Length: 111
Length: 117
Image (cartoon, rainbow over all chains, first blue to last red; front, side):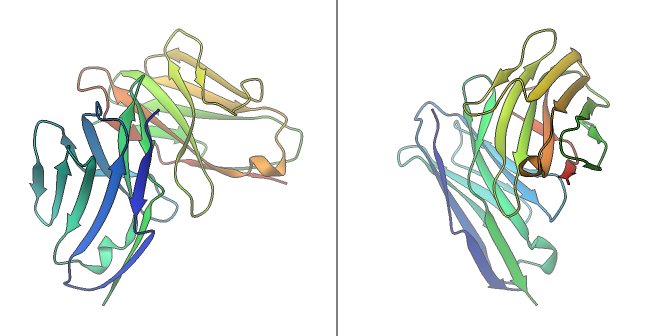
């Protein structure tokens, strides 16, 4: 089955700086890679996703890049703000429409 | 669009009792619903996949007789934790695939915090 590894486990940045979170996956056939943001006690919310037919996707301050050869994808947040502080999860698909989640990254944006 | 609700949002029960959690897709029909468990400071762990009108598929290590899943319609799935014990205390979250769009996208419910005393 699919195996997803996520790094770093915690990330502290100064407000206004950029943050990068990286995930690797094992199944070369995987074709969909979402990123979720989860605030304490809340539901995970999809913030951006990318499919394997593109290498990069951007939505305002958030971008995701995909390297299919190396089997890794990354979340980039620019001009970080305190409200970006949360836990971020990457995921990759497995058979049966399932998603396998990374271990999560705690992002702290210091003001 | 693509709103998923869960009820209750939190529940406290005594050891040995059963608890039912409902997951509803409010404005769409769900092909599949998923049940996750999340312990503090940990990731989402898939417990089972639920398809309308068929038996749920449980992940390895998840006791199907303890965690009963019923998926009666395209908008409702229920998880019943039977004979709950303190180690079952956790945050239970459901999600759903939208029937009419690309199948991997999952929309999450707000979660149910279960505390077993």
